[in-house]
Amino acid sequence: MVNDRLENLFEKFIAKRTSPSETEELMELIAEIENEEQVNELFQKSWNDFNSVDPPFTRLKSRKVFEQILLQIKPVKIIKLWPRIVAAASVLFFLSFGSYFMLQKYTLQHAKENAEAISPGQNKAILTLSNGTQVILSGAYTGKIAVQGIITVNKTANGQVIYTGANTTTSAAMFNTISTSKGGQYRLTLSDGTNVWLNAASSIKYPTMFTGKDRLVELTGEAYFEVAHNKAMPFRVKTATQVVEVLGTHFDVNAYSDESVTKTTLLEGSVKVTHNNEQRMLLPGEQSVLSSDAFNVAQANIEEAVAWKNGYFRFNNASLPVILRQFSRWYDINVIYDQSMNDQYFTGKITRSANLARVLQILEKGGIKYKVDGKQLTILDDK
Image 1 (cartoon, rainbow, N blue to C red):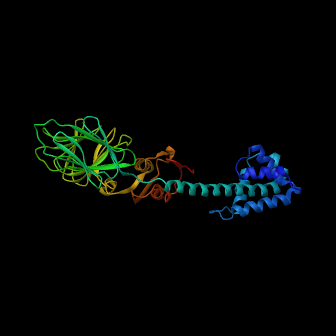
Image 2 (cartoon, rainbow, N blue to C red):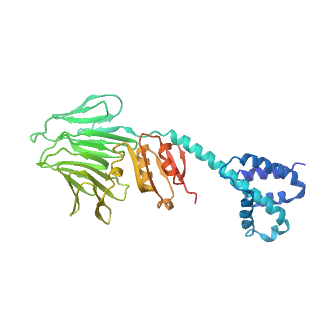
């Protein structure tokens, strides 16, 4: 005779929806001799559903683990049912974990499908002219996009803004700003011939032509500079916390407000980094690291520092938060993770042209699981 209550509680347990009292009731129903045939059928059905899950719990392991749990839960009440209830409960424990692994397997597959739908960033930005007019820098349009005094602003076919015209001290400078959002990057050539690569979620403010004693630009976020040499007019990059001064050189400045440090990495030439009244001189291959309580110079990992400019993510024992912030900027996503995972570190390299699912493989190799819901990436803590 079929016990509907037994079947109902059994299905709820597998779905992880039973209350503590319902779980206890289910174990007692399983322990009753008259329900043995129905219990065996329910176990067999669940076992068949679970059999393909990887990695499976063995019957012996599930029984031993659950026996240890039962020793701590109401021993007086269950002692008279011990032999049968332990056997039944251990199978339930096994099935419970089986359903957990099946759910995890489904969740991971679902997360990968969602992540595959999130495309990488593109060459896109907004140009704000001196009069406040904004020009969206995306799409196929090329050619002249604006005139700023005696300077012409052009957009090339490969997605680059170029300022052309003679610099002169007799004309008043106009200031432009190029800003990238999350999921964008852009390249521009300033009127002096300096090339600038702007990373995601960054902005640079600059004069349309350089006048006076120096060439000053203001940066938020990250940019790579190849500065045209001009000994008579030093090139300066100003951020919220420092000023970098050069004559002609190649260097990267990472000054995101959500990072705990500001990094300046030198590839060629020499630069002087100034913070308040402190100065640091950098030689090729060196990096200044400015935090709230220190201002140091150390040998740099050049490949890692400029990987973004060369089209890659490159991590060398990088912490999980640092990696997730880069993913957030480039894929225009929100990221949620537990602060207890801050001490996990990863090493890897992958193209920035890949979709989100592919780059997350770096974390998967380190045992990280995740789910993706729309534009939100949640890192799962399995501890």
